[in-house]
Image (cartoon, rainbow, N blue to C red):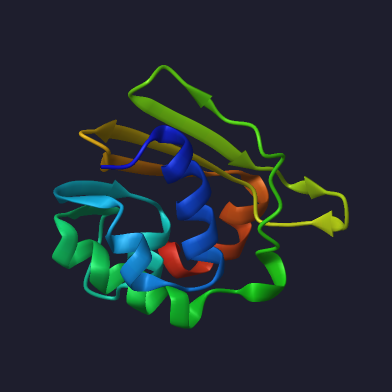
Length: 136
């Protein structure tokens, strides 16, 4: 359906522009999504794992409403790593224009769709969500 390059470009563009439908179109129906932001955003989740497009959609819709835009500059180098099945790129803390939340995106692609998506947060990002997670 989508090439690795397509997913790399489209996921970034759709997330940046808050295009929920576009983002969801990149995921397989039975995709698994993991991020420490899940329990910070969804009050009824105590872990960071979402299973299936329905759960992922709920998170994406709520997350785009509550995204801390002052710390999300969407800076990345344009480089990514892949072995043809796994796609990895970074939103580094240091940007050309200051700092941003530091995140590493790791996706497992199967049949042109995201099957598994894990987001790893760096120290700056963790500081932003630590209070929300402390009670969970």
